[in-house]
Length: 354
Image (cartoon, rainbow, N blue to C red):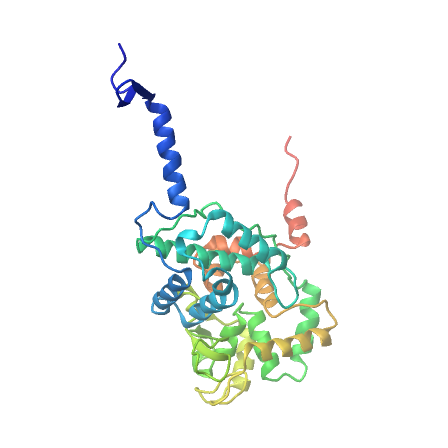
């Protein structure tokens, strides 16, 4: 006697194995899903999701972050994926899209975009699809395992000899740009933080520098604006970047030499004029050429500062707070680069134990 549920009777004299019937049902269900007829879960154009996600982001992130999101959506995602229904986007489709961006995604040069840029694009896609899923839309792709392999970029740190040559140039006929460069080399502040500094950010006795803001040029998201970009002065990169930095004693005499009215920007000496990061970067490049050292960008000063601090014995917790990092691992992994001389010095401390 057959076990209950083993067979399914269709009509008298005809029986069909339940396993075969269930397999057929699953196949039909898959076909209906592919034809978008089976699921009752709502869907809509991906462009609509992008717009809604941007609108939500605008009220919860910094203006510079929102400008970055807008640029990614409008320059890299909307035109190629926006016309698709959200339930038409598949894992394979996104993987192919990402692969295309890495290979020939730069329309101006027909070369691939940088892994950093493509990682940012992937982040926005993942975030928008998660937003759609939370809104109850029919999201069918799973991007949890889609990642971008990023090579480790070599960090430029000035050697002690190079640093000496640069400092010699900065001290000769020092002006406000040279002073700003010297200040960054011995405090580790970022270029945007330097450009936003006003004399009121220095304590009256010139012993402490308060970092409370940063300046940057971002994409103008106002569609009616005539200029494509604009300069904004905002809070620093993160809450940990709001910090007070003790100033080395040898820098205080230069602070006093150039100090002017509190509301004046230190790089311009004027209340009504700031210096943009790009302009400061150009001046720094000129100083590098005058020093006759290998090419370096302004951020190299920050790496150099952190490396010198480790070499003279700074504790990592103090250094991390001076740099404005949220934890010491960021400091250790990203900004601390020991020189060969330091490695050799540490190795010389070992002795043979017998």
